[in-house]
Length: 302
Image (cartoon, rainbow, N blue to C red; front, side, top):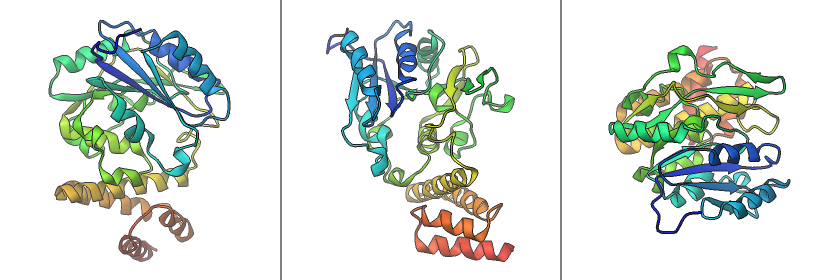
């Protein structure tokens, strides 16, 4: 238990929904962290209909002042609300933020300490990250989702341009000003993790930490990304590239504006039928002018 006036160095941000079979593993992974600094655990339960909230409450009673839950009565995700920037980032008191969703968990008790020391020593870096393993119906697959080429440091530009592969449940980053005043384009974005790392790139580079034991990423029927179809994932990617293009256009960064716009169009004209494309465009919150342009380019390639 911490006093209100004790300095918090790290805020663990966890979003959860109907994770009654998993949330205890996530919380135990947070609580086992061995650090020489104080940290808080902010858990957002999005009006779960199972026993997830009850499990969180039992931990809250045993760890007052450390576990700081947010219990919703109405599901916010279904209302189109972006959970992390709306509810968790504004509440985070830490100098740094660590992410982990309620169905994933950490395995290394030194994880936060190692990541804290990394960013304290590397002032030019804004974030650090490591590998994970997949846990599915067939058990644990001891193979990282990161290819050997992705197990490396990234420059500031690579982060901004999304030329990276960073696993959110391993991410640890500075609590920068942009997290408190989140870009207006983010409210339309389908893939918030991609948008986040691009924003962070404006503040520095990224460091890969191979010495941290892999975290565990679960694949199950309730997973938001892992259970999406290929077409749904392409739709989310197109959406994200478009709104990043709009974001950098507003900032006056012409190079990144054109890069993301080109990626959006390239997905539209590769591997999709006209019917599939139109279905995706309807769901993307795009201005009519861009929809018309994509359709025109698509038809020229047939």
